[in-house]
Amino acid sequence: MAMTKPGTRPANPRFSSGPCAKPPVFELTQLADAPLGRSHRAAVGKAKLKAAIEGTREVLGIPADYRIGIVPASDTGAVEMAMWSMLGARKATMVAWESFGSGWVTDVVKQLKIDADVKTADYGEIVDMAAVDYDTDVVFTWNGTTSGVRMANGDAIPADRDGLTICDATSAAFAQDLPWDKLDVTTFSWQKVLGGEAAHGMLILSPRAVERLESYTPAWPLPKIFRLTKGGKLIEGIFEGATINTPSMLAVEDYLIALDWARSVGGLNGLMARANASAEAVWNFCAVNDWIDNLASDPATRSNTSVCLKFTDDRIKDGAAFAKAVAKRLEAEGVALDIGAYRDAPAGLRIWCGGTVETADIEAMLPWLDWAFHAEIEALAEAA
Ligand SMILES: Cc1ncc(COP(=O)(O)O)c(C=O)c1O
Image 1 (spheres, rainbow, N blue to C red):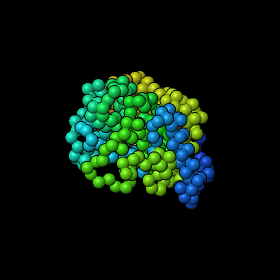
Image 2 (image 1 turned 90 degrees about the horizontal axis):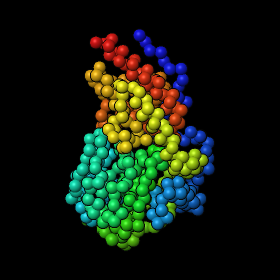
Image 3 (image 1 turned 90 degrees about the vertical axis):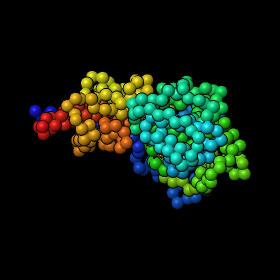
């Protein structure tokens, strides 16, 4: 029996986990004010870069004494720049619960070869952050984009730690509350929660992180692209918009527009509420359908941005093939694009619920997921 297709389609089927949907009001014509063909070091360019930094501070509520820099190579660039510049001064603890965190473990253990305690949890689980020694430098990912598991809060991180906390917050910033006093280095990229363009990384440093940079010189060479100090002093210009190398002024303009949109929906609180509403719609869908479940085992650690789901129906024998087929069906209908689980993650789906996604679109898409699931189950039965 062929299932009837739902009558409504999401207005925007873009639920990718990065690059993420542009803000709902976005139009290319809004980029017309970008100072294209001008030097980023001209007054107009510098003003735009400074506005991107200060807008970030304002919307995210970053303390006045924290430095915010725009750096090359997106979030990866920002995380690696921090690790290469600051680690090695003391023992490290590398914490990972999905593939990006695991990538940072590889960097530190195999490339930098630093003495590190490695703590990992399986997809869907989280490491006990209270069991970490915060007198070591601790590297972790706030929101595991590929497992849909996030830190519930920063309570486990003590205020009087001796080590630095280095936090990859790329799929958390602008959707989750980040406790700045517990974070010494925080990174994110524009392409995630605000739906900006992938190009530059944001590097946010506490005064303690700056102190490390000014008091410690790593034993390994640092490429120019990673250098944050000169003559033992922080290069302050980087944190005022004088970027290390040439930025894309088009991407900067796009980020400024995204920040404006963020302000228009109520700033950080508004963005968090939007993500929560969309994620809750998916969680409620899982609660009433016994064939699908959240990959995150503990509701307190469920992501409100990268919501990862697994199929739990016994009739499914090849989970990866099934999930792929469902995602393909939804894509073919034009109702959900790019929602297959990450290549290294367990088979399933990943539905982005960050603030640029409209909850109405999530709600319009979910009946299609129900349809696609049953259509695939029927196809399995027919093939048997
Ligand atoms: C947690 C996490 N870290 C790092 C990255 C890499 O980000 P980028 O490609 O912006 O460097 C991603 C991208 O999805 C991510 O989700």
